[in-house]
Image 1 (cartoon, rainbow, N blue to C red):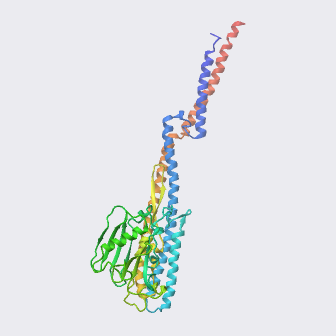
Image 2 (image 1 turned 45 degrees about the vertical axis):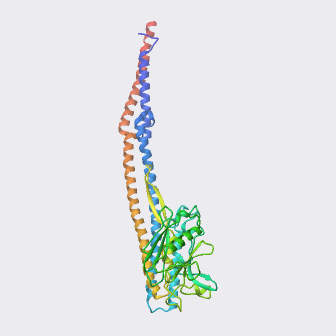
Image 3 (image 1 turned 90 degrees about the vertical axis):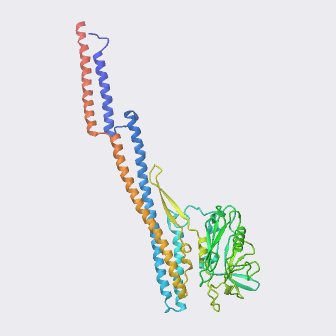
Length: 462
């Protein structure tokens, strides 16, 4: 028996400390609910569970993003539903105006309502927003520095017919102009694939269809014989201003004139006679292309700006420039990205620019029975365009709702997997805690017993 070292007490103390440490860890796990509270608890398990946590939080935020996307689609669809309802009203008014029981004054009243409906369509297109972002106008300012809309203008595009006047000496001729003065070498590429058309008159099928190319597509022309649609592709890749564009259009059509027409017009010496009632003219400043009628001339500007047919000139034709709207109003697509998770997983919502010009209803004119009848096809085309957009949005909303359910399902299952790795099994850990608690009490008892044994040595010394 020795007294210098109390080996039994030392052993009991060591076991007590081990049990106490294990008891503390069990208590920590029971109080936190986690099996892994620090990397030392399970290094590999911690790495796996943290990766899962990143995925879960990304999925949960992605679900919120998807809900925002669904709300955006619902706002857009609601606005388009109102536009479609107004188009239906325009159809009713056109059918009403086409009836010969209406007087000219009655048709003017009907036209006023149609004009107001077109104005409201414009307002919806411009002011429908989600979180202050326009849905049917340019959302991200992509056109701020010059879109086709801003670069090219034509007053005739809004009304569809010859609503301007061109003066030669003391005479005025009905015309439509296209102003290219906003074009320069930094923005001319925006014209690529854009174009315009004009019809020779109300009673013929001869159409001039002009498209621009800046991507290396060479100039070409086709269908130049007889009363047909004449197609022109004009390469303007080497132009750097509006004058160059006008020169290219004029010179190429002059070099490829439809059969039966001359390269010298009658309104002015350098005019291009392109059809039985149309002439193509370069403006004096070179930035405008003018489409003028050589059939009727007037002594005052206001009379020339009255759209065809003009009283006293029943055979003058109604020169339709409505397709100029395809040039001055580009139907740009907004792309709204929905971030669905942390794994570069995105969905793209598309909304299209929308206003009365793009839909074509700005030029609806029901002041005559003939015009009212023709308006029905224009409104029908606009209605199909809105239906197409709403169908696209509806399909995408369904897609987003599926994506939302997938996110929620994956998040739930991944959370279960992460829980299996990281969470405490409370029943098992309570058993461990009880065990370590008993061992701790046993250790205290054994230290007391070990200390008591050494007390017996003192009796030998008495």
